[in-house]
Image 1 (cartoon, rainbow, N blue to C red):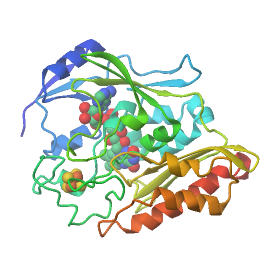
Image 2: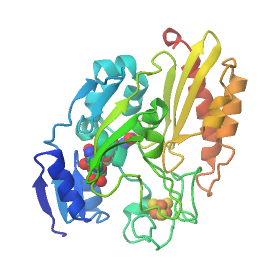
Image 3: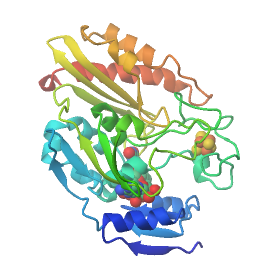
Image 4: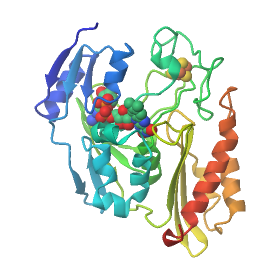
Length: 331
Ligand SMILES: Cc1cc2nc3c(=O)[nH]c(=O)nc-3n(C[C@H](O)[C@H](O)[C@H](O)COP(=O)(O)OP(=O)(O)OC[C@H]3O[C@@H](n4cnc5c(N)ncnc54)[C@H](O)[C@@H]3O)c2cc1C
Ligand code: SF4
């Protein structure tokens, strides 16, 4: 039994102050990931700062024509928000592909971004793990690695980021708003999560004490041509083996803009701008989608049990792009 203190923050500056002052303090929002990690002895915070009463629970239009999602809005409230369903259906679909209704009712926008990997060794404190205990090694690389990464890995860690919502946010090019001891800043979504490199214990580019206050969705929502596909071991209540968020801007059969992000294959939602460029100005054919898939997976590397993901990811990309290219009413 690990003892810890609990504090309910009255405002954002107080929450930041408390967590910045103690390296062993953690914010707690819905608690759906942090409490599990505490029960497994993976996280042992000295202080929990409850942020659920902070005024970060609104969805509001932003000045640039987009939408601002407060960090404490639940995954359910984002997915079923009228504006999100109408303007950003890709995001609704990605969220609803994740977890269960009960979990989505508790899970928050900020917590979803910050959730930790589902690597079995990370959860098992009887085994070494560079992410949980830096410098101890990575048993997943020679071990059982069916759910692990095939892109952007390092010799120190092959974990994946497990979120569905974040795959859609990567394609939408959301911006993460944060407040910390040094003030406010905005982090482009592509720069929020990190690759493992030789510091796999650091998942994101948040500085110590920084709190996520909101996620901004740009005006462009790809409501006409998009798809979110998730392949998993069972139909409900499972993390993605591979998922894809695909979004296209089309003029007739010609692709004006293409964005593709993969989930379940890397330490962060995976995009490849050069591969996406292959579609610009070309017709939306299976042959051209196949070229994108081959380019996105060119540097992929399997570790044995997860090598099947390379071919799977290619097929999921092609299917996702085909679905996105189909007009809304044709689906
Ligand atoms: C059985 C199960 C199945 C699941 N399946 C899926 C799935 O298929 N797809 C999927 O995407 N997710 C899935 N999830 C994960 C779920 O989406 C996350 O647990 C949830 O989004 C975390 O949000 P939370 O508010 O509960 O975070 P918490 O557990 O409260 O916090 C998680 C982390 O985020 C930090 N944090 C929280 N809010 C902030 C903030 N505003 N600023 C800075 N740091 C913050 C906390 O300090 C903590 O480190 C599943 C979870 C479970 C338990
Ligand atoms: S893959 Fe990463 S999280 Fe999993 S055991 Fe290796 S170092 Fe730990």
